[in-house]
Length: 620
Image 1: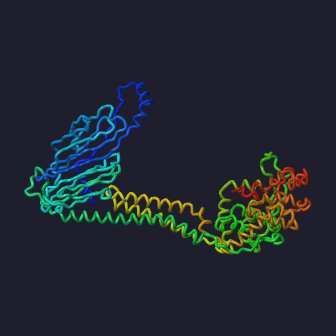
Image 2: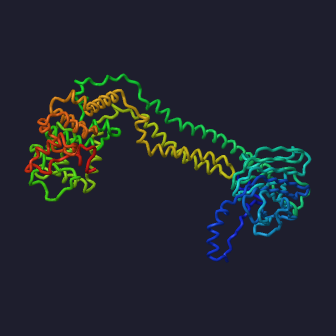
Image 3: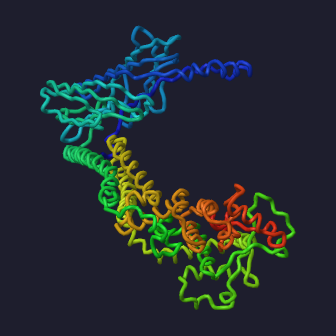
């Protein structure tokens, strides 16, 4: 609808509240007002119960208007008022007004816009007041060369309160109703219309605050129009008016269709993730082999690198956690590329270390490895070579203490960059597509991006083509569009959280995870370990590496201390790093307390809780 469809001969204004505070009051009076009167003022309110507007268009084109505005007050108010706006070629005459039960004193004040009709209310204000006004409007009817046009705004957008109901009638200077053609805007607020002879009656639904309601009508041209009573021009406007109104009606119908489509699409947006879950995310029932028998539990479930096991079991889409890095360092120690030992007396610094700090230990590179180009170690994977290179870069005379290494790694961003690149190499070796199908998550992610972009474009188009003041239904469409956009934004930002929901493990991946879960359960079940313990400390060390990759190193070390004989414990490659896992006075803790002589690392029986097997990296 074009802007000119909203031309108005007047507009309504809400009642004005009683202004109690006078600027001449002293500070004490003002304080009392704030403390005692503000709550009552803020509680004041009013409601617009009903408005009745009856209009009669005389044979000469002069428009006589009678209006009744029904208020319901809660609290005291000074007055009610109504402003009559006039445009060029229009004038207001014969203004009258009063209130029901003589509840107000009526007066008229000229204002720049036209006239202000005021009804001064008594104190206390009656609960219900109806404000009656009447006037003659000259120039409200436009007489063209082919037709007469009446365009009137019954309700203005200035009201801060919604109107419960508007009833009105327009009497035209014709003999038959068939000679009248009319349109209401916005049509969505119209509840009922009917024509009886030459009288058009209408009733509206509830009109929200700050919204307007108007009518446009055409009827046979007034014969010999007087320019003093009507606006006269020689233009033929009927075809243009019909075209404009037809376009407006078509836009309204289109908007209704778009609203229905938007509702259906909104439901589809809510249902789509569930469809994806049932299609791609729900784990199919697969007959997996029974839990390992005890003799099978003694063997590693798969020939996989510890970092790869960590990436599949604990990582995100093949990207390992810091436990994977920890397990790789431990694996290198278990395979003899590096060794872990207690600090010698001359290696212990003079600085006193708090007891709460993890004990330091020495990382020592194999003599052949230190003086050999690590890239030539063909038996190692690239990510394992990177860890060796990292240790070598920080080693002095092929050794570095854990506390010193940790301090150096934490001093800058180099280690972060190293881990980022290292994770990518591990991810390449993981071959996650063999184990996990992420098709569903990919679909949801693309869908979320799509609806987010589409909702932004759709909102801009709807707001531009269907202004909400002319098409209130557009506001509902925009609300649904915003909700769809928010849904898309949340799904986009949180796509990582829904990875396991909309993706699923392949049969190979399910079997792989089940085997490692069973192995994890075996290592953490003390009763089973006592009955069916690994045969040697070498096997225990191998298991401990994978326990670190699974994030259960601490529990496994404690179980070792309760199931492995002391003489075997002393042979473990990880003896220097287990102290902090056994602070209960037995097992490894006792072993190191008793076997760590004053000259062989007093205060230097190291631990891995400060960086390695404790479930996270200290230089992260």
